[in-house]
Length: 166
Image 1 (spheres, rainbow, N blue to C red):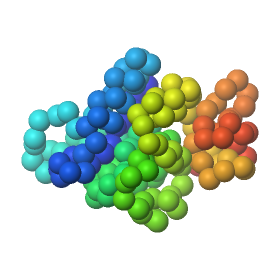
Image 2: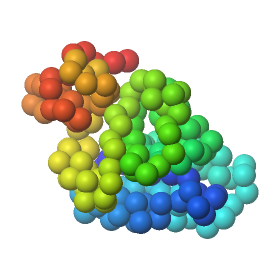
Image 3: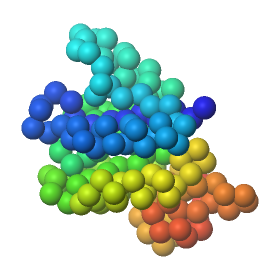
Image 4: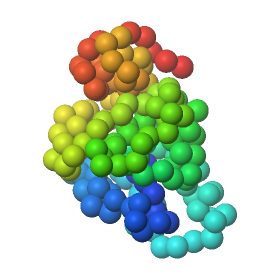
């Protein structure tokens, strides 16, 4: 079974996007993808959260992050997933804060802008999340692709990926 890690700001209520978390969680379950979502877990000590979340990023097959608002924890989770060569799908609401240049310049990710959750749904349902890999696209800035038959296609624009990374 494929395991997805759902990342997003948790501590500051004004930065949380609970509708996004619930929506993505239920969509992934419909696709029969197991989801680790710390947003729905009870409070724990800082040490427990660190160990638990690092363990789950290490164990996941892909990371999906809501990055409309800055969060140190989300940045750490993204960086760990990238270092482990796991595909990272970033979702940024058009009304969100400016995205960090560090995140924008990172390898192994694809960035999707959205205004409504139906756009997130279209992306998730239109991608075989069970067949993702990290690969450069020669046409756009995406570095996440689907392995379909003998091809590797960009999840952002559908072009053939130029080369596999890592």
